[in-house]
Image (cartoon, rainbow, N blue to C red; front, side, top):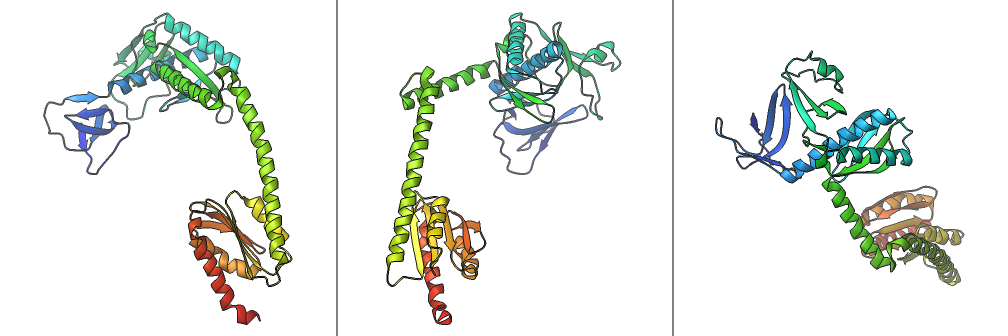
Length: 368
């Protein structure tokens, strides 16, 4: 059954066409497969169905690989699979345990790849009789309430039988190899076992090699030295960052001293430092805390994004802070005479400064 969907649909994972009409989704209604398509397909016409075989083959490998990992994990360790997820580059199995270690994962990886080398067959059987004794031995999470027709069981020779409606290979040798990548913390009392199968292993290895080659060029050392070289860079960064923080503190002190030394001090103090940060702005505010002045401080890319801070009398800052944030296309908040936040358009600092001067000028006679 094909149903025309009357809207412009796009599907990044498109794999199927019927008579050159894109299929965007397939769902089930009882025993009927319903294909949702982007345009009408003529009723009673011969249907030519095409699919993305590379993607279908990938799903077959990952799905059969999941069956194999699940079966061996349960048989060897007693770890049951409660769910699994097929991702774009990696997949994972959710195990009902929090005891899977890296050593156990290595053992499991060895066992599943040994099964692949045995070239065990993978077969599919349809059972019309739902009371067939073979179904009692098959793993299942239960049939849907609206299930009709035969029950499909996918079996790995001498190892596992599972009720399943998915696509699979016909022999474990088609999986080529399974790589278990990591054991990650999952839901309470569970762990996620991350894996890749078959062609994905080759793709994963290729991407790892490409990154390794790039790091070799950037770090100027062979792969065996990468960790040591990165640690050296991190140490150098910490030292440089410490020096930078010290210099910024000196700059803040110098700028504040220059302001304090003025005979005729302006009521607005404006300062921008591209390399500054929140600590820098706080340092300026603290050093000028005893001055009757409104502070407008910014850091970051002069033509892009950064941080801003408005500091001074609480009632003035409370009124002007949100307006400054609006001009700078930012968001912020504050209390007790400070308003600070992120700004997306520091290029509009001059507009914000004009707002502050206009406010000061308008309230100058009132304050006097």
